[in-house]
Length: 248
Image 1: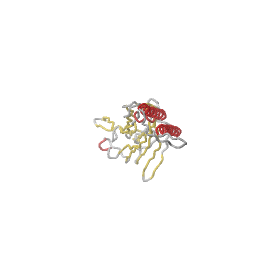
Image 2: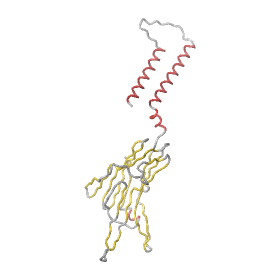
Image 3: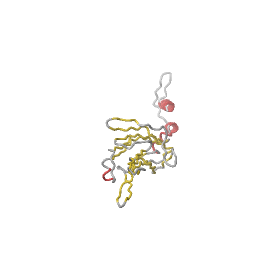
Image 4: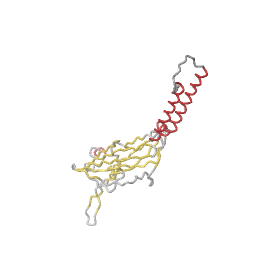
């Protein structure tokens, strides 16, 4: 980029020098001042030369900064948001009683620009778990997240969107043992891009970054807070399971 700026400044300097030479001719000897009026031909010739010089300068600027100029009019504009402000329940009917089998949510990537977003990759930059005033840094992989069908790279068409499952927690399960007792299998928690998460009371903070070859990186933070209890309907669960997405 620096060499383009240098060339542009050189071109502007040459054009300014040209105009100074045409309209303010300077000689090395004594200056001779005359009252001879300029002819119409010379006047229009200077005007034409001025337009030619301006056109040349404009062409140089466009050639040097074509991508930057194009980006002012053709660009990707991402809008990233949760599918719902609260966890969505999936209900099953057990002997006439409706109970939540799981709670889940998704993240939506809208491209509100006027060109397709090319080669989109989503990474987890960092993740942490906060509980009892202590912070635990979680291990994240330095690899793009699978969008769908094993694809790590996708394109998002303009005025289109991609949706990814972001959060899921499955209800605790009862399991009978050979000795006739019943064990309780704890709830199962899944968060996009993380592995082997224990479902327990606390707060998770995950920072994601969306990369595309024709747009700036977009970072956002996903926050989930849960007190560790399980409620069988969303009307009660929403008070103890909270989540939000923040753009960074």
